Structure formats: C-alpha cells, structure tokens
Length: 296
Image (tube, rainbow, N blue to C red; front, side, top):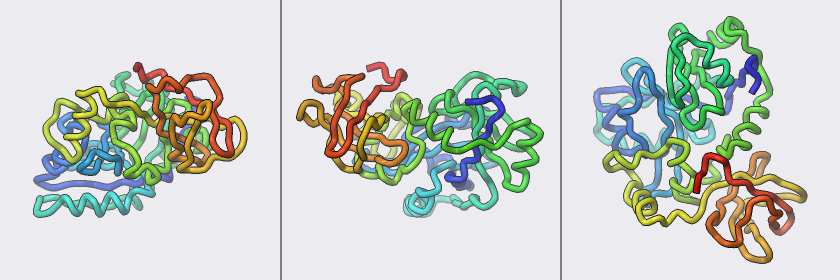
C-alpha cells in the first residue's frame, strides 16, 4: 500500500450504540470481548447465529460514551434489525450515522508516523477529534480513519493523502486472505470459526457466553475445525457461487463468493488438498493458497 494513498470506503456504514446498557448489551451477543474496547483499542468481532453460523462481522470503536460499529453497507439493514431484536428492554440507543461519518483507509506505514502510534492491531489514537485505528484484523490492511463526512477532504489534504482506486484496497485484502466485501453471501453458509476469526482477532475464547458460543467453543476444544474460508485465484474460465471444487475428481471445497475477489470454504486438512496445484470447478481452473497467518 502506497504511503500517500487513501481509500474512501464508501461500501462501509456506521452505526452508533449508546446508552447505560450499551456495553453489557454488546458483550452478551458478540464473539469478542467488549472490555478490550477503550479510547486506545478497537476490536474486530462478529455476530453469529445461536448455532455458531456466520451472520455479520464488524469493527467496534469507542466513541464518546458509546461505540461506533463499522460494518459493510450491504449488511447494515440486517444488522440493525438483528440488534433491535436483541435489544429488548435494554437501555440502548442504536443510531444509523452512515450519512454523517465515513471510513477512509491508508497505509500501515503512514499510521506509524503519527505521534503516539503503536504497531499493534487495533491500536487507536485521535487525529484532532477523529479516531484512527490500525486495522484490528491484520495491520497489513493499514489504518482506518473514522471522520465526519464534511471534514473528510480537508483532513485528507492536511494529512497529505491522495484518493486512490478502491479496487487496490480490495485486491490487497484478497491477497492477505481477508474477505473485503460481499459478506451477505456467507450468511448461514459456514461457522464463524471457519471464517478464520481466531487468527484475525475476532473471537475471544476466554470471555463468557455470547450468541453462538457453545458450538464455536466445541469446534475449537475438540479440534473439529476441518474447513476454512480461503481466497481463490482464477487461472481460467468462470466461477459460479455454490459450485464444488475438485482435485482429481475428489471434492475439496465449495465456492461461496465468486465475483472479483473470490473465496471458498475448503477442506484444508483433507489429504486431497494441496497448495500450489491447480483445482477444477465445472467451468474454471483455480489455485488456492493458505495465508501465511494460518499456522495449521
């Protein structure tokens, strides 16, 4: 990522959760520990089904007396409705601030030039009144600036950052093995732990109960994790979501996201899965490489 580039993440949305019960409300439903979130630390997390299947993922940032929720815009309405269902009688206010705030991403290298910056995923500081955080999933994804839309371009000018093609950011995320977009295509298709949330700091196995915790913990403790969401590289042909992937006529996975930044759920422990070989679908030839940050 070029140190002078900035990527306006216009596919992201911002919710604000506030109120006397906001912290406990989030702690009871998310896969990470809300106690990690402070003025100096943001966290990545997910909201799962009671069975532990993926529903939503987002980044939580402390803002004043409440919390910003940085989520994909296509998931906004569903996430808002789900939070309202869980709210019940909690003293919690849930606001959609997507028309007021925007997310901009820039390089890890640029982040480290800020006074007081620490090279720790999720580390958060302030630029004037606005939060800047090193991406809590993987610091190679750079930093995220949460800023009022009216101040965006003046602030970027003062920071010496130039608006760049968002496709560059998506491509970086795909190369790192982290899904950049189209999260709705994953809903109910795989377990949250199969999304590699342990490795990208989205699950805390030491916290108490949350929605989907029982199955998530069981898969972890009994070493039942046999499939993972992995990036696909298209060599030739065309991908179709839902199609199986084969190695020598043996199925080793299924395509879940088939657009420009494709991902598949892969039986990565299967003896028929090998890296650096060509795999087949009905109409395509692909390769699959497990990200370096997956150690087993």
